[in-house]
Amino acid sequence: MEVTGTAQHEAWRERALPPVEQLGAGLWSIPVPIPHNPLRYVSVYAFALDGGGLGLLDTGWESDDGWRTLGEGLAAIGGGVADVRGVLVTHLHFDHLGLAERVRQASGAWVAMHPADAAIVGSRVHRDPVASVRAEVAFLVSLGADPDEAAADVGRPEHFAPFSRMAVPDRLLEDGDLADLPGWTLRAVHTPGHTPGHLCFAEERTGLFFSGDHVLPRISPNVSTTHDGVPDPLGDYVASLAAVGRREVTEVLPAHEWRFRGLTERTDQLRAHHEHRLAELLAAVRAHPHSTPWQLAGLLTWSRPWDQYARRMRIFAVTETDAHLRLLAARGLVTGSGGAVPTWTVRAR
Image (cartoon, rainbow, N blue to C red; front, side, top):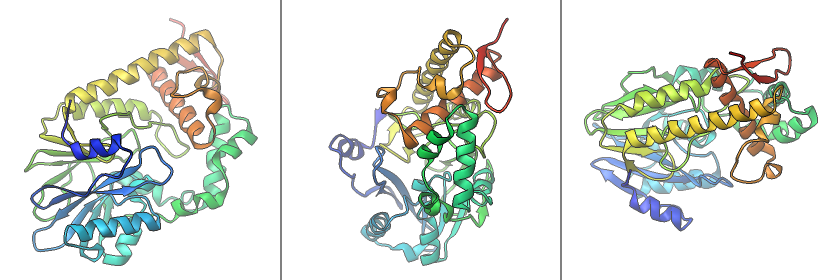
């Protein structure tokens, strides 16, 4: 792999926000900070449109600091929020969709995303913080969590209020659709896994590939089960990686970290990472049969000791473990016991 976002890479090493950069004629990256998050920022991409105005790909985390930073970034390229005509959203997470409603209110821009993520954002449960908490706690209990621990990890409904107010898109983009950004040929590429409706965008005129969170240069995105998700998100993710890895692109422009070349190499690395993880989990199931995902997560290798995991970090770890279990089950290697809280064993052959 070749690092092409050298200023981004250097800023990452210095733990600083990278600069606003012009990446080509009519194309810029604007970093918008993510508070209290090791990812630090999301790269919002701005496109100058034929006939005037701007298009955005993602918007950043909804906060006053994020809003100010986005506005300053647009001013640095000679525009402003009022110039935005349309917003493409790679997926429903708050660091990508969060500011879209403020942008729409300030500019009248349309907001577009994949129907699968749009359905989640607009769902009754998602728009109701109390229902969101209740659904997530129940889901964690079904994975083996103690109800009190699950409730403590999920947190109170007021913490969910900002997420319940995210923009419901007014346009939908399916796989293969061309985005309505005049002067650009941005083709939607459905890459489910990180979320059911995650979209990458292939710019067919330049060969640029906007990978969202699907392919990042340093880390693997979280791929987890959720109460409102799909049955086998990791299986979807691995299949999406294989399809994307066959593309010939000039440069990869991800939502986090830095730009790079070597898409095929990176997708191969990510697939190998998950195969290693699947093998480790299979060994844990073999050594500890009749365990729940909550129990099995504590037996795996993580970036820090398991007893230091709590709240959202522990939720991500357990639901990611569950996603790996479901792919092992789809491959016929493990079987669940069924019931309210399934346990897992190696499948007899």
